[in-house]
Length: 149
Ligand code: DAT
Ligand code: MG
Image 1 (tube, helix red, strand yellow):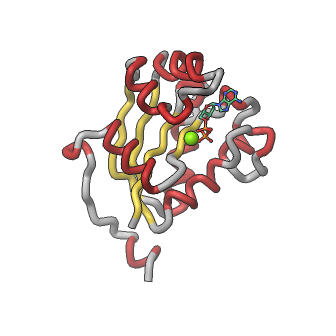
Image 2 (cartoon, helix red, strand yellow):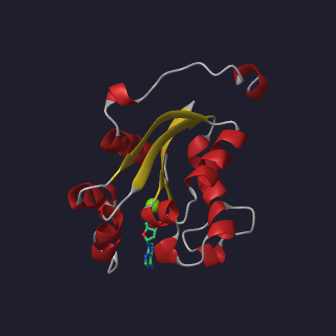
Image 3 (spheres, protein in one colour):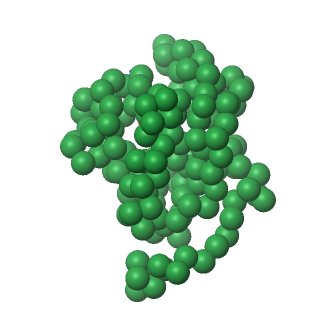
């Protein structure tokens, strides 16, 4: 099983899409392990997007992210890192297929409503950036034997 970090960014929260996004992950069969609504500090936003620090949009991205509210989540499931990226669609909603979250629910790259870790290594870093170990709940889902054989 893999874990990944998914976040509804402030544009997604403002647009009332928290429930829609959680619904897609729940209906897929992934398991929610941790969740919190936060107003990230600028420092947290900068750490979260550290790989993009050379990009011209880094400062405005971090400022926008730290304006909050931001729903940080940890989800678990088989191959979830890759599958969740497929569920998100492309970074630019204009390139995202219908049926994906970004393809269905947003328009512009700077307002693409959702974050998802892009590799297993990034997922580990991001989960530990946003969650203390005791904030992650290890629970057994009663659906497990109907999702996995
Ligand atoms: P993703 O969120 O798909 O992993 P990323 O890590 O390359 O994409 O970029 C992080 C966020 O930065 C992205 O969700 C929106 C913003 N962003 C990316 N490219 C951008 C661009 N060309 N102009 C403005 N914002 C951009
Ligand atoms: Mg990314």
